[in-house]
Image (cartoon, rainbow, N blue to C red):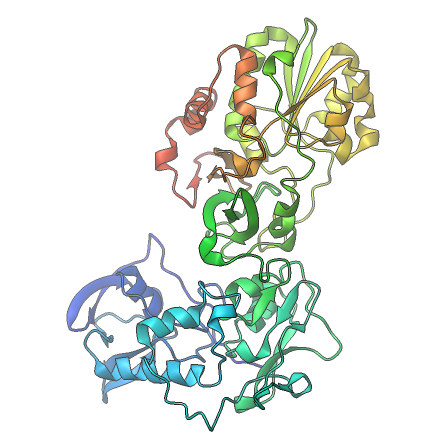
Length: 532
């Protein structure tokens, strides 16, 4: 069982500032954190392998060495576990040859039994070992060819290659979603600490001793958890790889769009990694207040259906609203901009239109990691915009009053066909949807719009944080438009820019009026007065 001490205390905007001396220069740093984070706050990056800001400190890689002056002179210490103390004197490679040589030595020691297969490794391009080697490693190997490497791995998985070298286990199937390349593992034990301390299900462990140590599941068990793919994110080498992405695309060929996952009201911050008009993977984007560095498998793998069963765009003139009462039903993935356009449409129709929102799906429990359990992603945004977020049952009871039903990103029949069946009594049914789903199939007219991954906009998550969505260039048709464009066109005042739609939202919700896309940080903005 690996040892660890405590969770890192990370600096915040409210951290007290203290003076320390770095390379004999006075600097002001956060005084309530470890030295590694304090140095980072003043622009000094420290190489590390085992340290992760959201995992318990392990301190076993020794890559983050610095010198600290103390009663016995200058001594090497690991910055990941050394607390900041006012007045402390620290020396980095900028002024200390001892630190520079120590980092090179630990890097060399870590690589001595690591395979040099970077060109074919799936982690190439985002490997921490590569990055550290370029900054602090030896330029030439001192390993004698006749000695060879002592590859780590479970003895049951070792094999002899064509050169007679004993190799560690390769592409070991440790679970339904993950393959392990044992000889690439550097025993940082990040994955062990994640499963123990974050996932709360200790399915991984260090086995063996000393230079025979290897990562393993418990005998007869598999790595199988809703958050198990997170270990592939935090693995600093190519040891843990996801089956769905393994050898699919080189990471340096991917572009990255920051956005928010709209499958849950926590609104996990994500990166959409895309190339050639296709999303190849969805990755967690660090937000300390929301999902930290974690993402559930359900959210992560959702991208695989984003391009399937899509509805084509049609001319908005094909939408005939009619003269009777109109029920406008808005689904949970509607953005603030969509809600503003829906209110514009309601206003243009006068007293004969009503707005409804919600879902027939059950609300679950928060998992304390990256999901709130509420499938209605923008529920708080509905409340901010004065749109009902739980009045579908009222609509079902009053179907006889309405002649037209407009659904926007709301697959009511797909969520619960029995509960939605009374809506079929409404003669004119118009569906605005990204997908040719069950509700679109029941519609008189089904109009294809952009998916949330393809739009710019905003949402308010379950914590009351206003968050931005950005559009990945992956829409299957250039003619597809965001829902707010179609709704505003139907209202008679077309809005073709998300920023203008957001400004319009500020007219309906004063709490939004002080914001614009430019002053909403990448991690969002906590709204004042929003009930959490």
